[in-house]
Image (cartoon, rainbow, N blue to C red):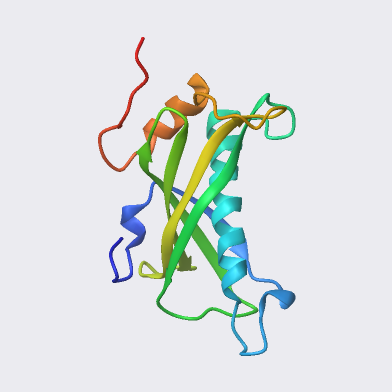
Length: 152
C-alpha cells in the first residue's frame, strides 16, 4: 500500500457520505473505527448497486476477514465526504478492495486502505466461490488483471 495519499482518479466507484455528530471522538475528529464502517458500507453498496447482490437473502454472503487503513488528514462533523472503491485483487473466494476517503470536491485522500471480503455460505459460513454476477461486477473495477480465475 502506498504511504502517500492516493488520488480520486485511482478509484472506479464513489458513494457520498455525510459525517454524523456521533462520529467525532474526544479529540474532535472522526474516530478510526468510523472509517472502517465507511469502507464496509462502500464495498457492500457496490455489491448491491452494481452486482445486484441481495445481502439480506443471498445464500452467499461476503464477510470481512482483514482490513487496514492509513490516515493522512482528519475529518470531522459536519463534513461531506466521498468513498472511492476499486478492486485490487479478485480470487476464487475472496476480493481485496482498495478504498479511499476523500473530502467532497478534493482529489487527495484523507485516508486509504484495504478491505478483504471472503465469500461464504450464509448457513454454514464455509468459503464458497464468488457468484458469477458478483465476479463480473468486481472485474469491472479491478485495478489490474484478474488473478486466480476459476477453472471452467
